[in-house]
Length: 406
Ligand SMILES: Cc1cc2nc3c(=O)[nH]c(=O)nc-3n(C[C@H](O)[C@H](O)[C@H](O)COP(=O)(O)OP(=O)(O)OC[C@H]3O[C@@H](n4cnc5c(N)ncnc54)[C@H](O)[C@@H]3O)c2cc1C
Image 1 (cartoon, rainbow, N blue to C red):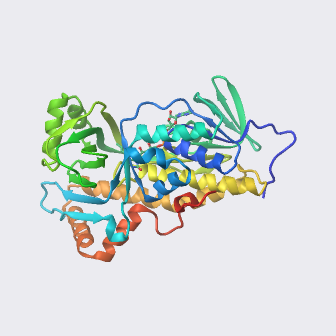
Image 2 (image 1 turned 120 degrees about the vertical axis):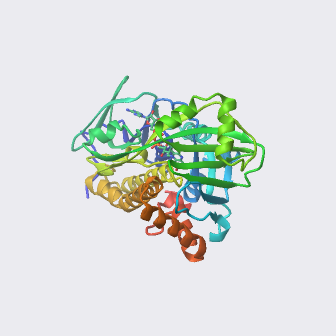
Image 3 (image 1 turned 60 degrees about the vertical axis):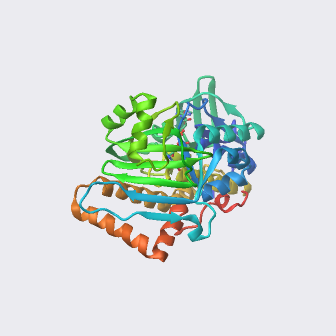
């Protein structure tokens, strides 16, 4: 095991987290709370009108890090998830209702607007006095002893860099890590809206030929919408006036929540699945969308990203406590190994589910319909699927997700 470098090596911090999205902020907070000398290199976040469904383990991690109490007033519980086959196809799946109570949970998780989540994380970063360079990393280079990160105001050297810099990650490129990518003929239109009827803490997912149309509860009579369509159709919808769009969304929701009023702020996201060929290499570890991008199906993307953040923080803090180099090859190898199965299995499952929705191949539609039929009818199968959806069951979750401090 490599000893912690001393003497000739001058580091501005032991660990630098590059990127101030939710994955990067959670990672910086976890590291600092564990006593690791941490530097955040993050320009202020861009406006983000999306919401995130945080599953139970992510909520526990935020509680453990002292962030959740600022999130809770802005978050709505997800007590049930309804899936409705809204295709006009020959083989249609039955409607399925997943209820958190069936697996002994009050809620699968909570839905929160990203702006509130980011604000709560920023407050915690400030409270922990995490040193921050509020500028983008311009260049990243790695050698045997350090990572050097150049920004507009100078350069810093650290033993470990955590790339939380999103889908177009500079850190990933600096580590020489390629990706495999598949673009879908789909884009997501996102917006938040008010509605006349209560959502009863139930998320409703209509599966259409072009992708899911999902309404996720927000506090009060409000919900967020993720509407996946062909890119040109999503763009046309996004260009409509508020009044026309409100009516169109209500129509697509079969008036389930009554009259709707869309709020300002629409997002447009072309969909793709992209996976880094490695989670870490040469003193650079990747987390969040720098490591994996998945389509917004089943609320997995950021939940996976937060498990990355918790895992690397746990491993680096342990190395630091043992007076070892947090960027040493054995530390990087352990992180990559711990995250491989979770990332791979979720990415494959989401890709398959999305492609089964898109396909016109009747046996595939039949298989999807049969699967949902079996899930609906067989209690143990339904409960196993729900447990797996909330958290990986084949491996132990990182300690923060289990409510343990690092
Ligand atoms: C429509 C939609 C709905 C979604 N819903 C859910 C959901 O319900 N549940 C869920 O779990 N996931 C969901 N996701 C996925 C989730 O939004 C992403 O996983 C998450 O935003 C990724 O966070 P991140 O911190 O990894 O990356 P980002 O949020 O992309 O943050 C990256 C940050 O790095 C910064 N950065 C970039 N380059 C540099 C640089 N050179 N130097 C310094 N900083 C840099 C950027 O400014 C940015 O702040 C959804 C995604 C979409 C598209």
